[in-house]
Length: 299
Image 1 (cartoon, rainbow, N blue to C red):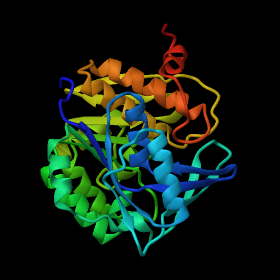
Image 2: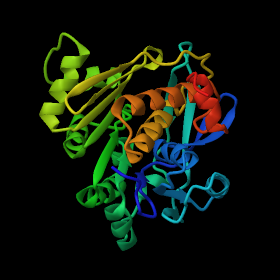
Image 3: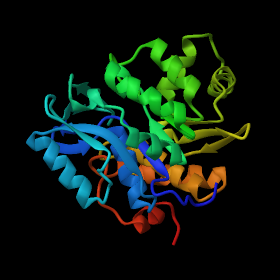
Image 4: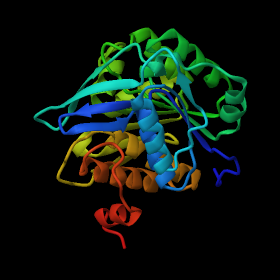
């Protein structure tokens, strides 16, 4: 796909929140994290979300402004507070989350202005977490009816999903990103498999998904696109935390699709940015893109 002529070639839908980490609070939410990196990569995304009128909401909006993320479609809620997540870093660098509810992003409202925004974007990015409340879920499904390329970053966060909603979301996806544990969990609902490639092929056929990306942490990533597998061993880094590294990966991958790059190049760049973010604290650290290419061994 050539460079988009739309104002917002990518729209990211869902949760906007604060991650409260042992070292302090950081802005987060998978859709905003993806948008943050897409903006860094020059792709001018839009975010559909909802925040409270509280100080945490105002602070988020200020930060988004500094990062040049468009906030015109982030709604303000006079009743519900801005989202909060209490995060703990585990011994293996993985993160456990307590996602408080109800909060503002549970109540994203449909509006006519969303129709033009979503229908004119090339890519629409969404996840499962935002479906935990019927208000935001209903708005999401109205968006999915008119979206073009639908990118599902599944992000399963117990207890905020059901098998039924996951299956429903999978039927909507053109591009699916999930981690190895999520791949094994979801395919395990249906049958036994001897290897992960068989799981991916089956998932593609079952839900008619064009492109499937599986991230494997320190072991790299696997891409199934155009009926072909692409493997990447990953880039080795000293991990600070894994908060947002998958979101950075997805943003990098989408940015390369917009540039009409080859699948192997998209996977390579996504692996590089994902690894780089894992080497820094938080989901959207400040960086220069040259630092990412240095990590990848390019000039």
